[in-house]
Amino acid sequence: MSRILFVYLHDSSRSQMAEAFLNLFGEGKFEAESAGLEKGTLSPHALQVMQEIGIDLSRNEPKEIFELFRQGRHYNAVISLCDQTNGEKSPLYPGMTQRISWSFSDLSRFTGTEEEILEKIRAVRDGIKEKVLEFIEQASDTTFWLTEQLRN
Image 1 (cartoon, rainbow, N blue to C red):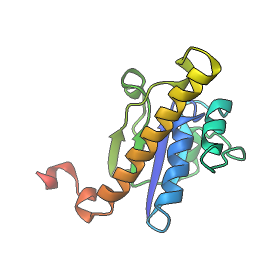
Image 2 (cartoon, helix red, strand yellow):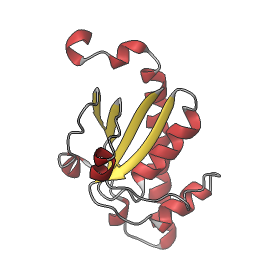
Image 3 (cartoon, helix red, strand yellow):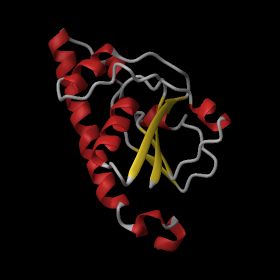
Image 4 (cartoon, rainbow, N blue to C red):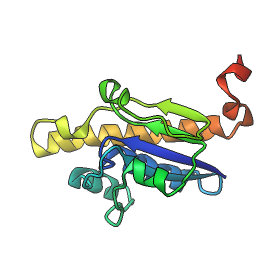
């Protein structure tokens, strides 16, 4: 079973969504966790849009990436879900075989009416779900886990 860590600045929305989707759709092949550079609080909007599709994140506890490292946790891949600017701040996690970056907009910066904000967050949620499903398909092939040098 491959262990995957999803990273976002505060582990408050995008990383939590990705963790839930991978644990749901990759059951038996993948084990996912999420963490942030800093420990945040769960986004009420993220909780709401995930609940709309039957996934309850309300019991999830945001985690800090450095705490997972101190606990000695190891991952086969670390996937950053930050936008391009913040993605560069993601730390290297020792011992991983893959470092992957998926750029998604920062939900906390969405503006508009409550419904407009929720629509934008639903679009991000659906994009994360698509990326997770693509990842499952790609990572189910053993050649995915070969180092970049071996693939070329």
